[in-house]
Image (cartoon, rainbow, N blue to C red):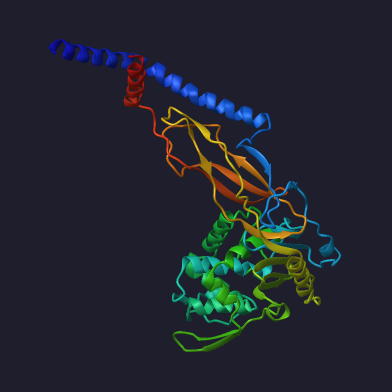
Length: 437
């Protein structure tokens, strides 16, 4: 009995020593298994029996809930209908407010002055960096601004909420400066805040110098980027309440002077579903307007810059109506997320499991015109290194219409894979030894 115990102990010692010596070899062999798995998966892809998890894929038509063999190729949106309308504006853009996708543009990326449509950014920066109940003290500089103005007097005090109504309903220039000085400390610092916000919204061809939009060197934007700013602004509930208010009454805090401001946006009554947004005019910019329409579950934002000069004050309304008609008549909301995609597993180096399974989930709804096609580009690594946690993002599915990126969906791991360690290798060697005996 004693000899048997000694024999077992000696066997275990030998096994432990052997395991230590063979650890690297076993680890290398297990890693090779993963590489073989990868090669097999690639062979399946190249012989046409399976799809590679990387690259470009065309999306089956899902409008009726079923898959077809129809392919989705890159196409350009036809703009023939809107071109026939002969827009007066120097530059114009129509975008899907849900994601900022450009549906139509005329000189949409040309840098131009934008007059009082600037106040869209002034308003949103103030809403995000101050409180509506803040008390704003009017400076001498603010009170000196030219028409259009609230006619404030230096030293007067107003609640920020009241001044924002003055800003957006009647476009008062003195109000814009008073707000800027209160929120930013100075007009210059507030302009820096406006430009920082523009960069945050990926507006690379926009630069603010003034908070009111009066003509100034270096003060410009584009029709596309101003539309993008407006899309962001209308997602703010307070902003929406401001631009849709018919009229607003308020009093100055110290002396009690009474004021009434009325909404000057005629588009609200000209177009069914209109929700704003802002007019503008200077001698350099011409007539400008940023509009928004919400109808039948669809929201459009349009911008027209340089849409005529006096006496053609109504051109901006005609241009905006043409843009909105084009959008509402030709675009419908569709779900384009492709749920039928099956991913090949990814081989895992130094993992206790040979591979990690993948999945993705999403919801990409957007406005689409008949004939538009969606394609998807899948990007992910060819190998993973253990340890791998479940629900880890390892890739991305990018959805495109033409060259326009319309959405991204993360590709995630479905299972965890632990890293191979000495204990795991010892167990594998023990299993081999046991079977040999």
